[in-house]
Length: 189
Image (cartoon, rainbow, N blue to C red; front, side, top):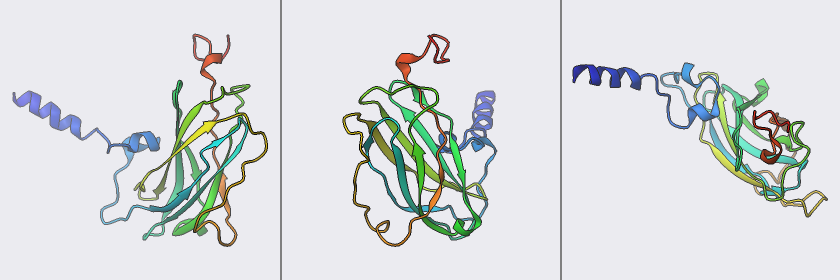
């Protein structure tokens, strides 16, 4: 009995906080700084559909009381494929306390000549600070619809409809088309 309890207690020290392992590649190494503040995403906006190759802009406003925001962590899940590795966009020093801007993702992939109509993905965005504290997570669904080839028009909501909105960086995740993947997962037939 003592041995079982000891193993359970020892194992609990190696289990990272829920959701964190999916957002940051160094989750097992991170312990939040005592007394530190995690960043907060206060507003987010993105369209929910576009064609394959669409330049998707994800608008984010975030703040950190400690002024030490380091990166934007982007994680993608694709229906029919699964989870992709987390991509990090490092912030410039002027954006470490507060920012209002957008990240951009060209959804064309070097690993897929096309994505099927109706392909669904979910983008999860979080901010990580220098003390390794993670913000709240924003979950943004997106569906590929090929019927419209022209850029979608949309009205930016408050607070993104005012002033210049800077580009903070690019998401670098290449999607796969599961129907084009070979048995070894390499994408070749």
